[in-house]
Length: 121
Image (tube, rainbow, N blue to C red; front, side, top):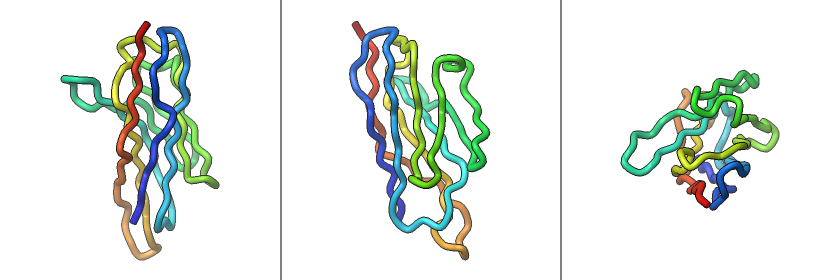
């Protein structure tokens, strides 16, 4: 019913920048909180950044000051601007969204398929 598609990942040198995008499509009545997670090889998935429907944001300490999360509600899209990238940022990045598909439904969490970010010289 709801699909999340990420884009913008790739290979970047240390100190470089990337912007990830994630667009929700399908049967959508309303989108609430959206977030980015990441999972590095051999590690647990961790929350990177979170944004409410009203635009309030939270960032993990490890990315604060380097990453910015934003959203365009008209486009059902969330962004992750990543600056000053470090090798430790290498991971698969996933977006997630809380979605109500009809006015009669509650909120459900949906996930994208992930996009690889590799920071290496």
